[in-house]
Length: 82
Image: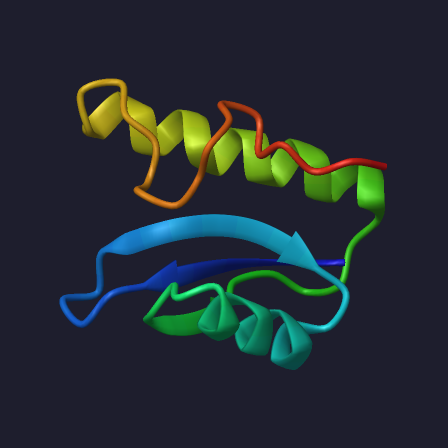
C-alpha cells in the first residue's frame, strides 16, 4: 500500500487515500469525475500502517481547515474496508 493525495490545479488536496496500484486508482478517480493530479506521498507500507497514515493526514487537514475534510473524502477516518 502507498499513501497518496489528489490535488487540484492550485496544489490544494482534494482527497487523501491509500492504494496498492496508483495508476489504476488515478484512472478510477478520473472516471468518478474527480479531477487533479495524483501524488504518491509514501513508500510501500503495510495495510495497518496505511490506515494510520490516512487517518493522520485527514486529522491534520481538519486542524487547518476549520474541521473539514478535503472535498472528496467522505469519512473522518478514510472510510475504506479491510
